[in-house]
Amino acid sequence: MLLQRSIVLSGGQTDLFKCFLPLAWSILNSSGIGGYVHPEGVYEEQNAGILREALYKKLVYHFQFQNEKDIFPIAHSKTFSVNVFSNAKESIDFLNINNLYDVESIEGCFTNTEEVNHSKKDILGNWNVQTDIHRLIRITEEELAVFAEIYGAERKLYTRLPVIHTDTLLSVLKCFTGRFEKLNENDFFGSEMWHETYAVRDGIIKAYDGEIEKPEYCVLSGPNIGEANMYSKQPRINCSSKGDYDNISLDEVVSGQCVVPRVKYIPADSELYFKNLPVVDGVKFDEKYRIVFRKMLSKSSELNLKCTLIPPKVSYVNSIVGYSFRDEGKMVYLSGLLNSLVYIYLINSTGKMNFTSNTISIVPVPDNQYKNAIMLRGLRLNAISPLYANLLKHVYTDEFQMDKTLISSIKTSLDCNITNEWNELFAIWRDLDRYITMVELDVLAAKGIGMTLKQLIDLYSINYPNMDDNEKNTWYDQEGKIVFTTNKSFVKYGVSKEIWEKNKDKSFSDTDLLGINRYYVAPYFRTDRVSLYKEAWDMASKLYE
Image (cartoon, rainbow, N blue to C red):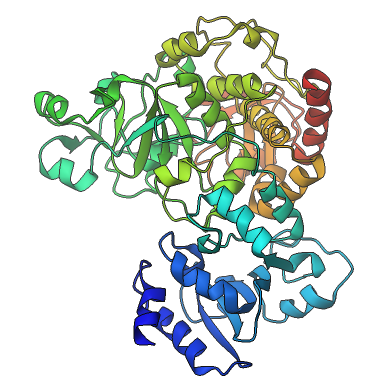
């Protein structure tokens, strides 16, 4: 019996609570029922498959709680669950509820047949405790087989259990299965480049507070990169934490005033730096364009995936992970996919804390009529400086010239004559243009895996309540500039609330929070992503189907 328990517990991370699971199962008689409240690690860890296989066979109920209301006396970012087991089960068949904020919400999942708001937050911005029967997810071997295919489990009963908020989102996950090519190990090559602590200790890189003008001096850190944007943020002078970063005005990038972002580190010794550059697929890793990600996948953030393309000579420390591709077109396509909310949800559903090569290998890359449109948008969002000119030449196709924006109800600067030569018109750098392009990527990515419009709208409404709040409080002028926003991820965007309240009914000139004087053209407006989804969906159906 002791040997059997040790086999079940092998492979996963050491955690005391796990020892009690097989102990409880052994104590229960053939018709006994037992329950535990424990952390979610057993359902998330990649190497806990043997324990999960035993657990799934006995599980009756799995009710997962987000600890935002401090139900459990530990950090609110920790997730716990109520788990009920039975030795009398003959098949895998259990009921699953995720993202509970209150114990009383469980009852509504079984009894309430009237559909409620499924967003994680209510209209007042509080954690939503309303539930209905659509929150109750039945899991059988069929669903576990779907999860195993998506997440690449060795056996279906080893698969991780994703966080699924409603039955609609289960149907969304199923769209990622069955008929799509995935990346294989020969498609890409990864490297962490510089370990921040050791590279400083060994004199390869050093802290630096000034401006830089050449990509070979640019050593990026995690906060530097954003969604399809190497120029997202730069550190303040005397930067000491990840909060000491400000957004970069992209008009300074596209005009050539900012060649590369200010960074926390630069090479300390050029000869030593070049000598220690990692060699991948036979070449120095910094000689190629690469797709990079912030390594940490924060569970507390809706948009926890930050993905961008970086040019040759630029490097990074290990708060970023990056990959070069033999097929740069596939890399650009992947960038477009992974900057859509559809694919961000796929990554979120894994429950992983870090982005790794195992993460990138689960991503489906459909070869269909939407591919070139997604590639082009992904490239234009990333290529906001001449450093990307060669990448455009490498992946250019004549089909790019036929592309049209899917949204015409809002004036943008997106339609232009596209050639294989980079220019300012090719780059998508204006605030509104970038937002509209991201909306279009959501639609194209959703259509590419066979989702319905309703599934896309539900995905957005349920999974991204903070994003929805931010968009309702972001105002644009007639030239596509953000005038005022409450979005905390936009550090020093637009003008202060005081200036906004004083001028929101007229055109005006004033200094924004970055210290740049701008002229804002009234009338100002907000966007409605759901309405834009519907417009883009209809146009995409006309253009591509």
